[in-house]
Length: 183
Image (tube, rainbow, N blue to C red; front, side):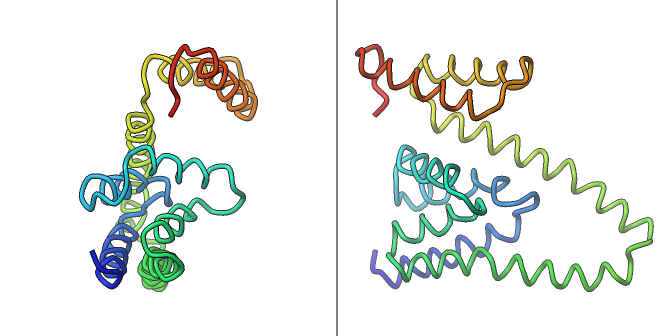
């Protein structure tokens, strides 16, 4: 694929994805993964998950994943095209909706539409988590670590940072003892 074709595919893909990003970028991460891994075959699940992991540990907005995918596929031009394609359509849509909101904010129809979008956003975020968990699955250890982390956070009230550190330590120990491969 030529670099111009890659830039065009980045623009098309992220512009379309940006318009369904109800609930933020995390809600559409599965759509991004599907597009770049399954449809365009630009990277493997492992590479996508590595890019996603980098965006989760860096400060700033989660939309950084779009920039990293763009950089991976097209260098600086890819970064700019992907990022602008993700941000501009959503910003324009938000502007138009914001202008309309001022006219219909008190109406029953507007409140109904607003209330209806909340479960859609929650569903997209949950589906995204499940999709990422499936893409990151490396065997029994990832399932055990994920379950233990969930219980630690939800039931015991542990800070997610501690579960993240413990998970990393367990995975590294398992890898270096030869119990599992994390590559």
